[in-house]
Length: 335
Image 1 (cartoon, rainbow, N blue to C red):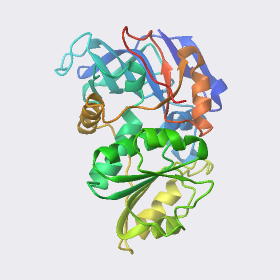
Image 2 (image 1 turned 60 degrees about the vertical axis):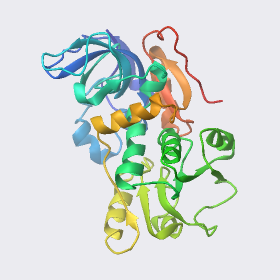
Image 3 (image 1 turned 120 degrees about the vertical axis):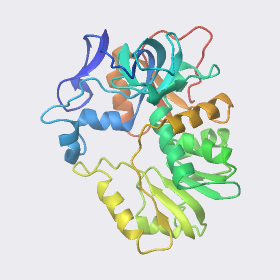
């Protein structure tokens, strides 16, 4: 099978399209014929070997997993002997190992059925960014009707999901992004939009019950100023400009500070959970959440997709199209 393979850390040029063996599955695993794969900043980070402190996890002196990609959509090609949730031919999406390839392996509980109203490209963009948004807003933030929610970095992958999910929960949503993304954010349901090139939301006197910060362009003390006295902040930005620790130091400071203030500074590690994937599937099927797709690249140009995401200016999600699109599906790309 064709796959995008990485033998060493570095820039996108280290990724090579090669023929490799099709992966084997275990008893509780599913082999997915990949139709599309989502691209995440985490994929770029592993490709680059950043932050350096994580290299013992990624692999020393080279990555343990040679094929990048976790977000996936496709068709069930084979199932292990203990798999009960899927049948051959099912259209699925979720998380897999090495989705930048024609076939990828997934545990059955990291996949759900793809809604018929969602394209493979759209479905491939959901797993990581969508689950972060659900975990932040629902599990930790317990956001509900009437609350004031602010999403900083609202035009990115996590941000576009967070705006729509917060709106579906009945919150009043304020989205922060650059000038060019104002119309996009209004179109996906933002009640108020702040252009960060003209207005600083941490100094304009307004306060919010919940802030999801995907950018890390304000200090924790500045962000707390924009919170209500009992509000919650989730500092989620990766900040890979710090090549040793990325956002690790900021996360640690948030954990320590939260012990001494009335406001809640919540941190968490994203994990694949069947419950959150099912919740996202229901939101997609009901039309309450529609993935925002910036660009779609063929597998042969997947290194360019990683470059684009690594530059930090993607609007919504970037997707790699691996197999031909299924008949009757279509994908809307952000203008």
